[in-house]
Amino acid sequence: MNEAVEFLAAAVPSDLLLIADHASNHIPEGIDLRIAPALLTEHVAADIGIEPLTRALAARLGAPAVLARVSRLVIDFNRDPDETNLIPAISDGHVIAGNAGLGEREREARIERFWTPYHDLIGDRLDALRPAMIVSLHSFTPQLASRPHEARPWEVGILYNQDDRAAQIAIPLLRAQGIVTGDNQPYSGRDLNATMNRHAERRGIPYLGFEVRQDLIGDARGVKQWAERLAPIISRTCAALA
Image (tube, rainbow, N blue to C red):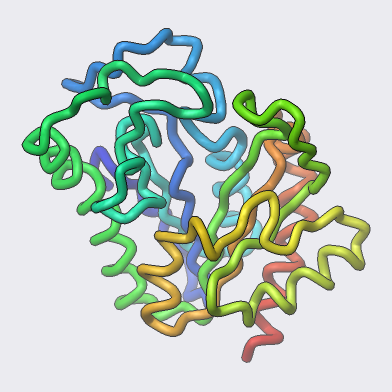
C-alpha cells in the first residue's frame, strides 16, 4: 500500500479481482484544491458507499481488491493520462479552484505521484494473480446537479465497452432478482471505461463493471444488503464464463 492505492489480499486464491477507482475522498498532503470542506462529502469527491461495499464484497467472495486512496478531485483514476478531465477544474457544476490553470509540470507531478502507482499496482496484481474476471465497482448519484431533469431510475448499472461477455450474463441475473438494472446506463462504458479498457480489454480478461445507486449503499445496512445481493451474481457470472 502507498498513498495512492490500497491492496486487500485474499486468504486463498480467487478467480476475481475487485477494483474501486473512486473509493476515497482523501486530499493528500501538499494538495490544495481550494474548495469548501463540505464538498468532500459529495459524489464529486468519491463514489459514495463504494469503499465499504468493496470491502464487504471482498470479504464475502474471498477475493482480493484494489482501492484508490485519493479523491477523484485530485486525480481521476478512471481517466487516461492525456484526458483534460483527469484533473477536473469543474465537477458537476462545482469549480475546483486549485485545479484551474494547473501547469504542465504540476499535472505531470500528480500523474507520477498518484495515477502511475495506482495503475502499476493493478497491472502487477493482474500479472501475479491472473484472475478469471475483474469486478469494477462505482456508484452513481440519483440525480446530477448539472442535469436536474435527468431521471436515473436504475438501482444498478452494468457498464462495458467492446467486451460484453460478463455483462450479458449478469444483466439477466440481476433483472431476474427484481433489481432495476441499466444496460450501459446511467452512462455508457463505451464513453467512460478507461480503467477497464486499460487493464481488462487490453488483456482479454472478462470484467463486470458495476454502478450502484449511491442512496442504496449510503449506510452500513444498505452496504450489507447489497453485498448480499451482488455477491452471488458475481460468483454465478464468473462461473458461467468458465
